[in-house]
Length: 384
Ligand code: NZQ
Ligand code: ZN
Image 1 (cartoon, rainbow, N blue to C red):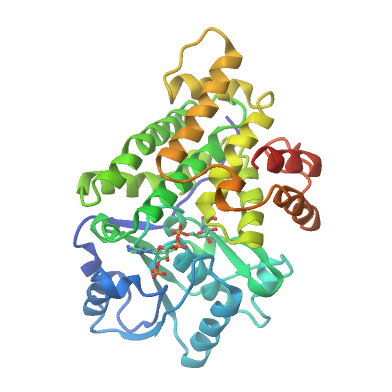
Image 2: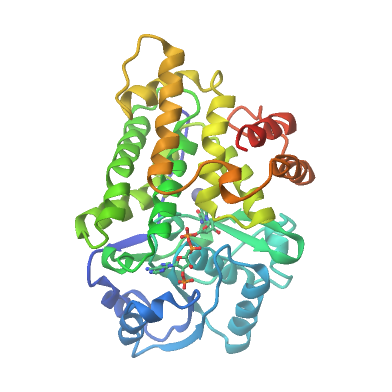
């Protein structure tokens, strides 16, 4: 196991009816910016629960944060925070609203324009405190220090991470996920699955705890994902999906182990160029990437085949092939297609995507830094 230092400061408040706790979780006297997305919270009772919990607080609202939150929209919220001297951000929504709110929290305290954070031109030093009410189990953003922001003007999708943007708390009420369209449940389960894979599917370092936690999360997602589609109001299914998505990317399973993240890096280029949902890009890239990297990842692929999919073939190559096929079929069973052409993109998309990877200077992806431009192009071609 590699050395590590781990602290996750986010308080998780889990269960039905827990939005009411907001009145206690946000300091009295805070000047709150309430951020949300395109309006789903107005139709499922979440907005009403949040505002009634915050009756005693000063609250200014900012709605309209879009999926793949944009710098352009978020800049307006940054100006609002500065103008109204707000000092606490409450994000109510999915990963996009939480990520966007992390950006607002950090950019509001900068002298410079916030995009400099994404360009690595300025280091975040502090951020306004934020908390969240999560409405879509998927990204893990509710208890991690990461945010992914898109600049529409330049078709760039970039990320930043800083400990100051860990939410102070995350309210996870599984009942608020009942209103999610099937597509978003499917996206969420696939995203969480790939988060686990990015931290697990590398090479062994004798990290028994991390491996066993990761394998159990994968098995749970394979079990509850289809059930969440079939039984939208099954509380236990939604609760297990929600908690596994948080656990998939709250840092715990990633301590002391090598990590990959090439699937995400390549996937972000697909969203930036063609607007596919985040999880759709992952379902396209991961199977192709596993095939391409099957030698480098051989030992973990064999472990994954046996411990996650229960495969027991003598021939290791067959074992690996079937594990990759099972993974692809899981995504397809969730209703998330796994080929670029399934989304109406032409075969030439692979060339355009490879050029975008080159332009972004992403030439050493993966746990060994061995996914170079040529490898990325080969992966995109295999994903057509
Ligand atoms: O905007 P509203 O109207 O709220 O509708 C949203 C949105 O259209 C809807 N929705 C959310 N909760 C709902 C609901 N509809 C009905 N009922 C509910 N309870 O779902 C749609 C998608 O929401 P979004 O927040 O975009 O989805 P998700 O949570 O999958 O977030 C995706 C974003 O997170 C980033 C992705 O790149 C993408 O930008 N990621 C963030 C990560 C992180 N911070 O650690 C890691 C991930 O790998 C990922 O990159
Ligand atoms: Zn993701």
